[in-house]
Length: 473
Image 1 (cartoon, rainbow, N blue to C red):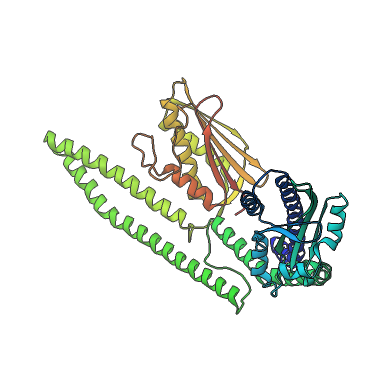
Image 2: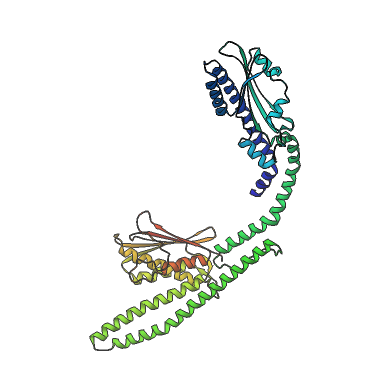
């Protein structure tokens, strides 16, 4: 649409230019008429003053300079008794027009004025001598100059009649173009259909492939497992070069992502061996009768277990964010899984009351182990914070429902609620002894299955987590 508007704007530009220039022409002509009329009246008033010749000439010159006009005073026999010429034809309109359309072919105001004949015999002078002030404008041949005049009858101090003739001119370098406006309009009517055809051709050959490229890029960015492939028809032009460049970039990013994922997995595996050794050492020290060795054993085992949990979570997060490659999708009854996880939580956290509501059976296609991790993390997180809340007894309410083609898992607690910060950010935790990766894993699992998860403060207090997963992968 924007391309059509741009092309049509270009095609209609001459018409628009003519309209704008016509407005400028109208404004300039009106301004010249008013200025010459004011200058003529000021000259009539000046003639009525009792001034010596020198003072009169000085004031007349100031008047002509102030109005930028040519003032001439003629006696009854047609002889010019005073003149002051400050007319300057090159105003800003003339300068702009000359830059676009060239000069004025040597046309001058003085030559044009001489072609009008004797001053007192001109129609405007005859009208002024009869007592009617005359104001008007003329165009030179070829419409290159606009010359406006104001003529008034005056009486000198000695009682003799005078004729005040004021002229102002301005160059009209674009006037020829304005005079051709109707021809330009007809030409535009022919060019606009051509512009529409060109616009449609450009839309099909340029914009449509770019829009398709944009659509696929955004689709890949939102996908759980983005691919380094853009399915755009091959082209051998500049658009093809752009597509190949995007393809090369995506391929490089995919290789980098795979390299980072492999590095993380290798690193975690390398850490497991020394961790196992530390745990064995701690267990061995626990058999010692030395109190210092027993304390050292406790510290070693506690730290090693925390580090082992962190390593396991990092590995799980890396695999899930990497797209869970090689992991099998199976049918799973989410409602049954939720009941089993909650039953296990009841045994671990007897101080928290758990409730389960919703569908008795809710089947979805997923990676069962990952979805189980998601449910356990949400339930364990809610149980920990429910115990920290003021409500007694502490309650965790779990609900599993179907909404359209989605399975929705909602977990609420009566804890202190959600504070500031991104709960799903890596290593963000307020749980004592937590790794800070549980909720990050929750979001990664949900996103990997094509869903979404949100967290908010529940209306009655506490926090509420709502995970939505498509039932069909």
